[in-house]
Length: 361
Image 1 (tube, helix red, strand yellow):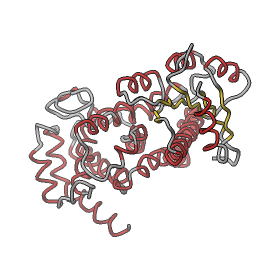
Image 2 (tube, helix red, strand yellow; image 1 turned 90 degrees about the vertical axis):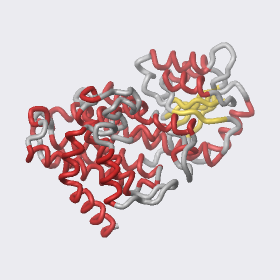
Image 3 (cartoon, one colour; image 1 turned 45 degrees about the horizontal axis):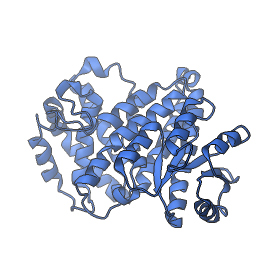
């Protein structure tokens, strides 16, 4: 990001919160404090903030009403908003996220957490804008389809994907490995003629590059869940599962501002369907069989293989043989039967990726 301080607007009717927030943020950001939603809209006639911190419980015009007004105004709709609240209410949080808030921060503020959340979200918004700016010129560039264009696009996707991966150190090079696994599966499909009529219409470069965004929704998962050093409980797991929904939402927001977004078509499918299961017991939509897009069914195998063979806070790594056995047992249950057979025919190549990357790490 550039050297200029990001402009943050803090909206809260509580003078104590305004003072505390300003004291925490003033050194790093250009912070403006506003006591009401009405005054916020007057301010937005004059300035364009990088992000708005918006209190939920305010008199006259509460945070939800302010956010609704922001989103209905084309000029202000894309300003990222983080809600501030002293309540812990999942229903209210979901309502705010559905309205378009990007996160919730609890009051009273924890200075380190407030600073870290702002740092992460401002970086996300910066990279999102880079992606939008890139796509505004993508249509003409794609016609030429030069290696330079593909390298630039991959760089942006890689940057966004790295932000996801860097929030969760346990995943290591998960994104890169799953991309390699998909390349192996796609090559095998071409060579064996599997689903040839469908895959022939895919843009191979877009397919592989866009797979990097399959976990982009994890940006919206709270640190306390994403970084938990142990197995998630039932409530936490339900929240973690929402990363598929959040991922689709993030990509759709980018699409709204992008005249040429064909490669995001692939990314949205990966993000939204890689946890669906062949027997209909997956999430988020419990799709079944052929109703699950082929891209999602392919990513399901790549994603599970890497999760099993990698170390996690709640488990040691499985061996390659154990991992292959588990995926074989999932044939017709968790996984597409024909794609399971395809995986079994190239499983050794998956393990070569794992051993090669370990050697180079």
